Amino acid sequence: MNDFRPVSPAVDQRIRNSFATQSMMTTLGAELVHVAAGATEIHAPILPGSRQQHGFAHAGLTFAIGDSAAGYAALSVMPEDHEVLTTEMKIHLLAPGKGDLLIARGKVIKPGRRLVIVQADVFARIEGKDTHIAMMTGTMIPLAPA
Image 1 (cartoon, one colour):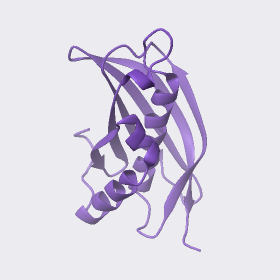
Image 2: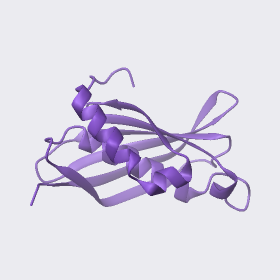
Image 3: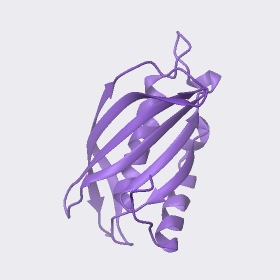
Image 4: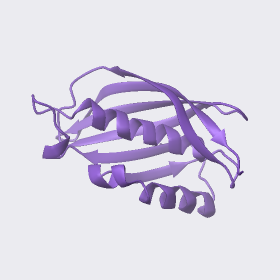
């Protein structure tokens, strides 16, 4: 994620504070590990309660952290008083989530005043090797203060 410019400390803290309030991310053991302008990275362990019947990471875990990574990437380019919501998200599952850790890298493809087009790529890490397991594309809608 080194090809993205850093955000201000205030934006970084705002995004980290928001992430900390997501009970779903807490339940999944997810951690926001990187914030940049238009990009974020989230890690989540593949816990026993996050596996499907074959022992792989459940697609729900993959989708949840990918959606959050893309959403926080969008939030990183919004004005301070705005929020974002997902309006649609498509996922392509490319390979089973084998390993101990999932890594979701979200980025903004096209920022806009009414819509923000985002992408997330999710990788499974096993023994230090990352396998691309999902590609997601979606749309976020900025929410202005009421």
